[in-house]
Image (tube, rainbow, N blue to C red; front, side):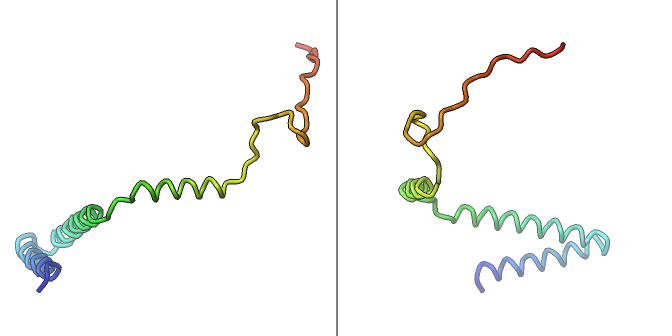
Length: 96
């Protein structure tokens, strides 16, 4: 029996003990709390087992995203083919 099997057996035994102690009404709440605790523990264990991403893969992903991004560089507003910005107009006097 592996570690998962022994964990399940121990949970079943604990659930049976809680059923004897708490009765029918408290058993559902205790099982729900126990299931949530096991889920959080399993998620924490799985998060620790995931290997970190090497820095060169992060740099490659950033570089690839930069190459896919379509934008028009605005370094030279006077370049040929680029329209001139509108000049500011005269102030319009409005009734106050």
